[in-house]
Image (cartoon, rainbow, N blue to C red; front, side, top):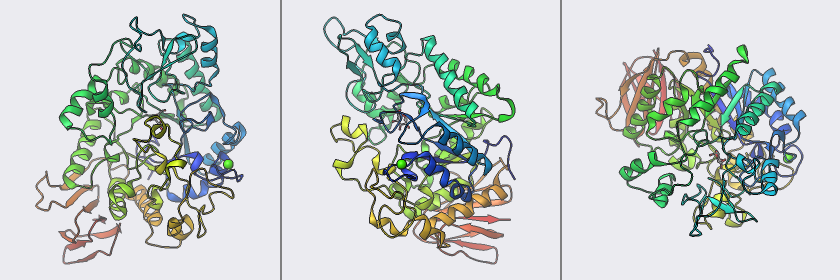
Length: 535
Ligand code: GLC
Ligand code: CA
């Protein structure tokens, strides 16, 4: 049974268009390619797709450097292709979310080009953050870019502009009324073309405070913001709330305005989800107040270890936090910015985790390829494209591994993704992981996802209340067991290497690995697996 509104307990499939399916042999995925595979997407049992940017862009940061937010980049097709994709999705009863990137534009956007020409003090420059160097010649402030290196770049007349990300991504100044007005035009543009909502990129970054003030520990702050950087948790949690460019109160004013714009579309049920990494975690709840956005990403599982104590901790906390504002959490195990879950925790572990997460209340985001159990691609350094790799002189490898194109069919790379040369190298070792192979194998990861998503819709959605049955922090004697019950389904995850016997009566609906065995009110749960039991 579908819950209402549609996004409340949705499963949303994230498509990275460049890596999904190439329709014209140039080695890069495109919108007609997406459209041609929507039936596949539908067959997974998801409710919606979210597409990473396909707008006009020099593509220095995978399209998150937008040069025209109201047009399609030729590498992906054109506006008619976008319209067709939306219409075909709707005909399959799939909603469509698109990305909106309000923190920055590309330096190729006409506004930035005008700002360069107009010179210091001009209205054109006031749409960005342009400043002179300090009298002693130092940069306007000491902030470090999230992609490494200084967050300021100098232009020909000597002024500097702020960029939290790549130097090709000048930050917008949200104090300029032009900026707010332009984004409202963009939101309407895509809504009028038919989309059902937005994923808001760097939603917590739009408003900056004290742009000319140095941070006392810029390197510490930069390290704290990088999840791959080991750091004493106490130090990290002390530094994170001091970020002068994230999670300032002013952002909420912007989202209240956006919300009334969304609501003006009435029964279209427009929704928006914020990408907001904020600290402390309770701050995330502010983005989903009743007059703001509908969902906020929860990144806890993207780097969570496969450990029952830790998982219980982050899962129960997210549920409780969102309950405090009368809403449900979101879950994601992978996205285009982080290592794929199968590589991070292991293949069998990632299946168990996915099946466990699919039972939880709230919406689940699935990153294309996750359903195939894809690992990260192996990328030779000379093929890397991520600005993180380039700006840190190779110190950080960047995110290309998670962006390798999808293997569709055949026995050799590029596995039907393209008739040309794929934009990132694909591995022949993926030959057992293609969609074609997995469709034919009942125990494949793909079929696990399909079955699980159907069972989820049938048995779990709408039973919001969850009762924890087993956890190391919660009365269980078995440190490798986690379990909860929702309605008449109990979900058990055995994180350990040996099977576990639990006392439960009911019918096994699905298991992520091995074969369950049950008699006399007891069921054994195979090692490293999740099982759903219907009572
Ligand atoms: C978001 C995107 C990421 C991009 C960054 C800058 O975090 O998910 O891919 O690089 O914003 O736009
Ligand atoms: Ca193409």
